[in-house]
Amino acid sequence: MAMARRLAAFAFGALAVFAAAPALAEETLVIGMSLEPPHLDPTAGAAGAIDEVVYANLFESLTRIDETGQVIPGLAESWTVSDDGLTYTFRLRQGVLFHDGTTFDADDVRFSLERAAAEDSVNAQKAFFTPIASIDTPAPDQVVVHLDHPVGLFLFTMGSGDAAIVAPESAASNTTNPVGTGPYRFAGRAEGDHVTLERNPDYHGPDSVFFDRVVFRFISDPAAQVAALLAGDVAAIPNIAAPEAMARFEADDRFAVDVGTTEGETILAVNHRRPPFDDVRVRRALAHAVDRQAIVDAAMFGYGTPIGSHFAPHNPAYVDLTGVYPHDPERARALLAEAGYPDGFEATIKLPPPSYARRGGEVIQAQLAEIGVRVTLEPVEWAQWLEQAFRGFDYDMTIVSHTEPLDIGIYARGDDYYFGYHSDAFDAVIAELDATADPDARNRLYDEAQRLLADDEAAVFLFQLAKTGVREARLQGLWVNSPIQANDVTAARWGE
Image 1 (spheres, helix red, strand yellow):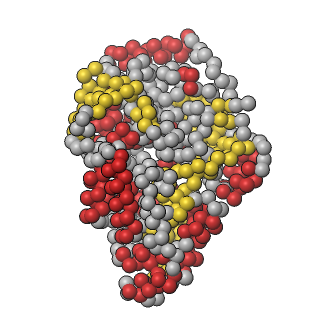
Image 2 (cartoon, rainbow, N blue to C red):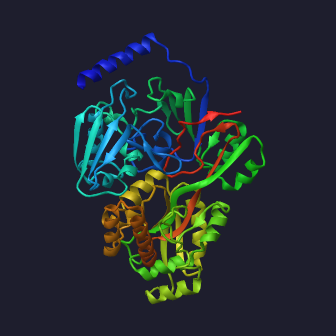
Image 3 (tube, rainbow, N blue to C red):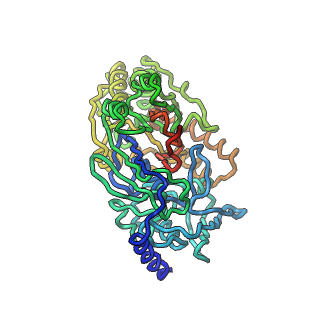
């Protein structure tokens, strides 16, 4: 296989010199994004902005998640699962090349999965890979994955950006020079401004590539996003940070507005390692103090759905628990007094850059003041938030939207996660859920898990983030909903 790689790399270089790729389009698509990714390796970072640039566009995984949240073939064109749920046999696509011309085969899959599960792995979702007991590669186009216990969402997680298949030749430099197998390849980056991808002439599915280039421009200021759309500097902003401008675009025939769903549970996270947040009475008081719909109306201009636990309302297993802690400042003050804080307390809320956090923080500050909780707002950039709150556990409270799909299990990570939340009962439910594949049984377990989190008020659950997108009316093929963190442009094209 190593010889095949060298021959493919040589052929790639020769073709680049002697042959021009067939032109499928002569245009550039410019997409606006609020957040800039810290780097471009989806297997080495938790920032959702990484996947928003590279998922399906540059990197591919064994399976793939489509706009409806369904698992479809990716680099694996088919698969079978043993009756006991412990063995997955993947049949790989043949003739696939990485962007540097090296061949893709079963060894790359084994390398990628073992790398993600390794002791020194920096994969943000390392837990996805720890159930893997062993991997066999009986043929270049066949991978057999053995699990040490059944994992109900294994095929789904294998379609995530965290499970992107990378090559050993280029894995170490993927943060700055990403090399995948997708329809677009890396063409350059201007830090603080944009990332450019260009059409991959050797893509295994060339009919799905409609642009010569795709540019992702980073525009953090909501007003600047509106201006860029109106000026034609960007063709679309799939997640606009200015919901107040949606009505303006709806009234303009040049644009189309898409309002969909996301997996983004927006929460006021509390640090269970610090008093008074280790006291359930305090957490329940905070929940009674916030008015979820008022936060949605004031911070998001009505776009968003109040939630009472960590689960998406569009999922069939969702349980509406918003009535467990109705807005009741009087009850909140009584709970604080019972917990030993009759005069309230002081705390800080770290606010990352998204408008839901910055605007929502101001609303929550005023609501908590009504029960004597005096909050200082501390705006931070994403790099600071990741370093201080997410990795360093240095925070009292913070507002963040968890956009990973079906991620209720993060509350079972204990001291390894930034919440620091512990519940033996919840952990047991998640362990059973992880080993369950039957949909009805999984839904019953999701129900139980949601209720346990609500009873414990593991976080102050606020609202489900809506997907509010604006695009030029003639641009077609972008996702309306976001079942995962992605700006999949593989079907994007100009219409009539």
